[in-house]
Image (cartoon, rainbow, N blue to C red; front, side, top):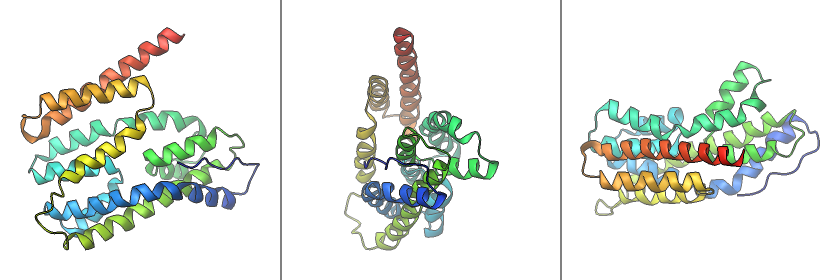
Amino acid sequence: MSTPTKHKPTLPRAEFQAGVRDQLPILLGVIPFGLIFGALAGSVGIPPLAAQGFSLFVFAGSSQFIAVGLIGEMAPAIVIIATIFVVNLRHALYSASMSPHFAPLRLPWKLSLSWLLTDEAFATASTRYSHGNTASAHWYTLGTGLALWTAWQVSTALGILLGGGIPATLPLAFAITLTFIALLIPTLVDRPTVIAAASAGIVAVILSGLPLRLGLLIGALVGVGIGVWVERKSSNVES
C-alpha cells in the first residue's frame, strides 16, 4: 500500500485528487476480486442486475463472496443476513476510529463517508489523518472511497459480462477460498487479530459438517469474541 502524501493545508480539490492517487496502487489488487465476484455470482444463478446490485448497494467484498456461497447452497435469507452481519462487525471498529474526525462534518458528509469506509479505504484514510492538517482531509477520504467504489462497480460488471465465457469445468467456487486468504493475510498485523483469525478458522473447520455453512457463522462469532477479549486483556496489561 502506498503511503499517503504528507500535506500542508490544501484545497478540497487537491485533497480529493491525492485520495484518488493514493488508492490507485491498491486497486490493482481489488479489481481481480471484483471480476471474480461478478463471475461467481453468475455461476450460482444470480441474475446480472442483482449481482451488480450487490456491489452497488452492499459494497463489501467479503460479505458479497459469503452471500454468493450461501445463495449457491440455497441457504435461508436469515442465515445469509446473520452471517454477513457478523463478518461486517469490524466496520463498527472502523467507525469508532474515524468518528473523532467525522464529528464536525454535516450529516450528508457523515453518511457518504461511512458508506465508502471499506477495509482499503479505511487503511488509506486513517494514515492520512495521522499526518495532521486535517481541515480538508474528508475530501481525501471521499477521493479514496470513490476511487475504490468505482473500480469495484466496473470490475463487477466486467466479471458478469465475461463470466459466461468461463468453462463450466473450471472450479470457480474455489476462488472464494483463495480470495479470503488473500484478504485475510494483510490484516494479521497484531496478536489479537492473529488469535481471532486462528480461533475462527479452527472452529469453522471443526463445524464444517453443519448445514448451510453455520460452522462459518459460529466460527466468526467465536473469532470476534476471542479477539475482543485478547485485545482488552492486552490493553489492561499495558495500562
